[in-house]
Image (cartoon, rainbow, N blue to C red):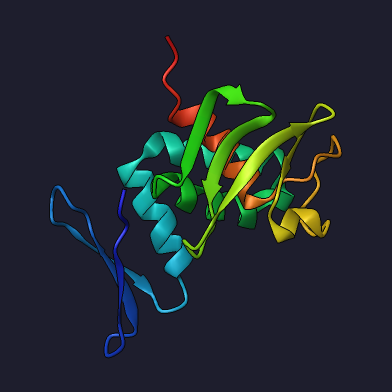
Length: 148
């Protein structure tokens, strides 16, 4: 899913054009995040709802959850079912220059990214650290995985 949000410097606003109808939506200059969330809600309501539920359960994950939505929407999660050893999935980096392994270690999900490894990733009430790559993996399982 490609969410193409454009900024118009003269009008000082963001615009997003809904691909199917061609309807134009505008957002104030400092509301690009709102524009993105709105576009996702229109293009992929299941992904939007899953992110909102994640945030409702763990408000400290709001920033991480929306970064994860970008990764899922861009096709950046490769799930391994069954896992390859202890690797559950590979998730693209935000800059597109690498990928991170989502692994299970001692019963906990972990990631190789700097945010997770440096203990900077937010912690849930259960004590789990969640970086955007782990959040993307969880969102992927909720909305993309085909179950037979």
